Length: 131
Length: 131
DNA sequence: CGGAATCCCAAAAGATACTG
DNA sequence: CAGTATCTTTTGGGATTCCG
Image (cartoon, rainbow over all chains, first blue to last red; front, side, top):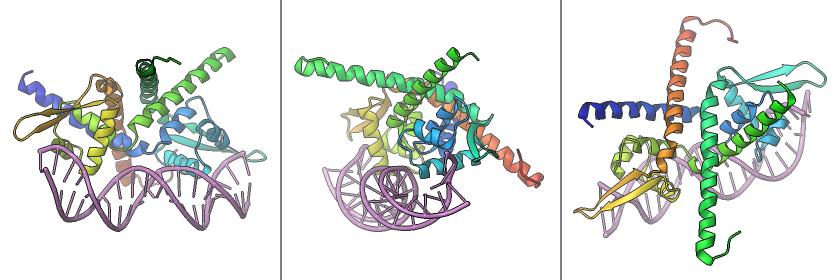
């Protein structure tokens, strides 16, 4: 590789580093991406989200939803029925994360599969017993 | 959309949710992705990484690198020179995250641009609430 | 139902200093 | 250079209770 190319490559990766940093700033914590993922199938109510995103407490869910609202990823919609119905849905901008989520999800599934196959190998080679 | 399609869509999104969860499990914390991003330009030494990934303390960098090693994303290579030279590099498997990192980085840059332009707008048109 | 308020703990992360 | 060690602070997050 000639030096010019190397320099360009470095510069582009610096941009990428900054970009990753920016992205992680708004997506920090272990819940936000999961909530956004859950909302990809359509609007959801508070309790629904709590069920889908297993393990999250109402306090955290509330907090995360507020932050997602502030960043304009999520819209909180209030219907004046009795009793009041509240739904959270992805904004248009929120869907701009679709590609990232999709790709990350696929990578995660592959990773899990890889872990499993490694675990099996160890089971076999260690004591000759397979599951 | 007919119901069959809807069911399929739901199922696929559940898989995606699980995938995202798996991915976040190994990429948790705010440093791992940055370190991996930094290593995309080639092997780096400890101090180099500390300089590139701004703000990380040696303690954290050390800890994160160990975890990345355990997950086989990163290889720690020791050269028996004087003094000993140590370099960290992406494994083959580590590069499997390239797509994700690239996409996330691009999204982050766009997001930052969006934030900036919004800030400007507010400065200019300091009127009511936006939709 | 859709949260808010409070209390509390453990883990994460920062600062600083030190070592081979 | 390549980390450890130690200490302190901050944050994340669980449990529980309560409110409209």
